[in-house]
Every structure is written in structure tokens, then in C-alpha cells.
Amino acid sequence: MSSPSGTTPRAQPTESTQPTDPTEPEPTGPVPRLGPADTARLAARVLIPTIAQGAIARRPRVVGLAERLDLDARAVATVQDLHRRYGDGPVRLPLPVRRFALVLAPQDVHRVLEGSPEPFALANREKQGALGQFQPHGVLASHGEERAERRRVNESVLDTPQPVHRLAGDVVATVREEARLVAQQAARTGRLDWAAYSTGWRRAFRRVVLGDAARDDEGLQQDLDALRYRANWSYFLPRSRTRRDRLRGRLGQYLERAEPGSLAGLLAQTAGEDSVVDPVDQIPQWLFAFDPAGMASIRALALLAAAPEEAGRVRAEIEGVDLDVPQELRRLRAAVLESVRLWPTTPMILRETTRDVSWPTGRLAAGTAVLVYAPFFHRDDDGLAVAHRFTPELWTGEGHDGTAGDAATDWPLVPFSEGPGVCPGQNLVLLTTSTFLATLLEHHDHALEHPASLDPDHVPGVVSPFRVRFRTTGR
Ligand code: HEM
Image (cartoon, rainbow, N blue to C red; front, side, top):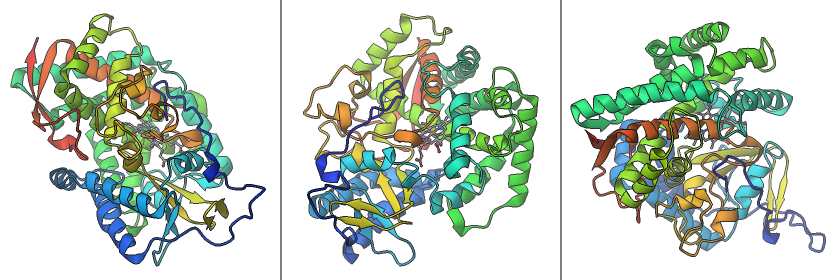
């Protein structure tokens, strides 16, 4: 699983998933297929509800409905049932228009993610259709040489391996300034909700990514939001050239301005005018990906409000240090990691086979879309004893009770993916979200009003970030 520092220990595939065993004849037929009734159930209970909530931009009303019906818990139960009946898979889905396969075994998650981008390409057709709406040359939509160059630039600007980014002095100051304003306003009104939280969070990350000049650039945000809602429809909607050109133009201006202390400033130094990288097209991914980080962190705050013992440990962590000094706040990072484990913001990790690939049960043909449904692995209580329990110890290296000891080493907890396509922004996200939360908690208490009955020992499948609400008081 991904470790708190962002490095991803490589788990070896177990024997059963080794693609070739010299003593056994290789199976020549395709891997097993789901029956029509099971395919219909998978579509109705897993694929449609997940896609309807919005793959690229969440739709608040649908997420609210999903919360009321606890749809993601039902989705996990559906895949668990398939795993029990079909075994370790993978299984093909008999869809008319597209070759599609579902990963069912923990060890196959590692195999697919570690085997990216060859033979499991990140840039599959659906992703290219979606991301093509606003960043056709972004790293995640790229393959081959272009991808390698773009990945290199992303890792350099985002300081991927570093728990504390080289711009952390500026980043922490900015995030704390915006979080303080959120906390003060919440204390005045007595209420902290998504609207107040996300307004402050978005101001903070626009400044981190583009510079202080972008703090109130709502126009840019509106264009990006509109394009992301189009992207939810992938290639089923035509591209909106006007909006995309306007977004590119605006981002190009920030890149030219290259404000010191911002990611745009670093990008200008790192990539210059490089035509293969297309620096401007790398920025939308950063802006768009900071949004789910806001969702993850408000839900982490909700978990802490529901779990007083862990909240006490977090308080002890932040009271003992000078928060203006950039640092790794381990307990708060673990709370955010738990939030994305329990409610992954990238529930569907998609790959596409670039050639035929062998499994002990058969072959997957080249051009098959391969789906890792992360909530299943994060919440599979057949394999992970603490599946539904808020367990920060999974990420702090302290060990935890329950029988899932092995989970700490090779159970696939992949909220940030893993392998060569792992999220290069993970450490930056954890730095910014932990700093934001620490500042909110520094002088204020936030009592959970919704969801009022959040039980840290049995966390529901869906908590809509748009409905989370706290009663805030000064300390
Ligand atoms: C809670 C916040 C975030 C989560 C859970 C998250 C998770 C992920 C995941 C699962 C992927 C892999 C997607 C795939 O394989 O299809 C990914 C890719 C990526 N993320 Fe994040 N991300 C977050 C925030 C960010 C932020 C803030 C940035 C940049 C500032 C960022 C930059 C990227 C980039 C550039 C990629 C593409 C990597 C590639 O194609 O090699 N992410 N992220």
C-alpha cells in the first residue's frame, strides 16, 4: 500500500498471479466472463452509481442521494459477492461496444498498477475522452515518450518524493492565511459548512498553483468547473473550444507571470517553452485535483470530530509545534489518508492493455479496459479486518489491532494509486491539507452537526462532503 511518505513499497504478485509458470501450459483462451445477470447487477449497482456521482467533477445532488441510500456500500457488497463466486479473476464483462475487465484479486491490483504504462496504459480511451475536454496533453492522458517527459516535469514541480515541498515556506504561509480566515468566519457565524470551507480552500490552492494574483479568479475557476462537468460525459459530449481556449489563455498568462513561490513559477523554470511537455496543459490537473483534496480534508475533520481519542492525539501533535514552520504533521496526514481510504476520491482506476496479457485463468486481449474499483479493496471486510473502521494507524506505522496485520504491507490501499502512475502530488496534498486542518483546529472546536451519527467504528459507504456541517466555537 502507499506509505505516508508517498513512497510505494512494491508488493510481489503471489504465485497465483504470475503470468507465466514454465512448468504449466499457458492458458490460451480468454479469462472467464461474467454472466449476463451479474453484468447487469454490476452495471446497476457499481458502474452507473459511480459514474452518475461524477468521475471528474462530483454532482452534489447525486452524491447526496448516494449518501442517503449508502450506494457505495452496496457497490462494495456486489463486488464482494462476485469475488466469492468467480474467484480471483480478472473477469471480462460482456459489453457490446467495448472490451472491459474487472480486477478482483488484491495481488492483481499491484500487478496492474506496477505494470503501468506498459502493458497497462494509464491513457485509456475513456480517460482521454474525459480529460481531452480540458487537458488533452496532460500527463494522465498521455502515452509513450510524451508521457515520460510530462511525468518528469510533473514530478519535478510537485517535488514528488519530498514530504515537505521545496516551496513549503510559501505554501504553508498561504494555506494558513486562508484557513485562518475560514476559521474566524466560522466562529463568527457559529457554522462551518462546505460553502465556507471550499471557498477558503479554493483561494488557497489557486494561490499555491498560480500565485497570489489568482486568489479571486473566479472566472478561471468557472471555466474549469464547466469543462470538468463536460468531462464527466467523456467522449459522449463534443469539446467546447471557446471555453478551453479561454482557460488555456488565462493559464498561459499565469505561467508567463511565473509568480515566485507558486507552482507556475517552478513550472516556468522547469519546462520553459518545451513543445513536447506543453506546460500549460499540465496545470488544469493540479487545479482540478486540489478539489477532491478539499473533500477529503473536510471529511477527515468530520472523522476527527467523531473520534475524540484520535482528535486528542492530533491536538497534542499540533500544540507541540510551531505551525508556521513547514513540517510533516503525521497524525493529520494519516487522518486525510484514512478519509481517502474510506471514501476514495478516485474510485475507478482505469488502465488499458497495450498487448495481450496472460493470467493463470486465461488471456486479456490487447485493447481491454481494466478497472480497479478501489472502494472494493479498501472496504473488503472479507480481507481487511478494519475495513469500516477509522484506523489512522494503517498509515502511521504504529500497527493496529484486528487481524489485518498483513494489510500494512501488501493489501492494496491505493487512494493515490501506486507504481509508475502513482499520484505525483500526494505529498503536496498531504502537506496542504494537514496544514489547513491544523490551522482550523489551532484555536477552534468544530462539533459535527452532519452527519450527526458518524460512527468511527462503522463508517458508512458514502459521506457527501457537500453536506458536512460543523458548529464552530473559539477555544
Ligand atoms: C486528495 C487528493 C488527491 C488524490 C486522492 C489523488 C489521487 C490520484 C490518483 C488515484 C491518480 C492516478 C489516476 C489514474 O491512475 O488514473 C492521480 C494522478 C495524478 N495526480 Fe493526484 N490526487 C490528488 C490530488 C492531486 C494534486 C493536488 C495534484 C497536483 C497538485 C495531483 C497531481 C496528479 C497528477 C499530475 C496525476 C497524473 C499522474 C500520471 O499520469 O502519471 N493530484 N492522483
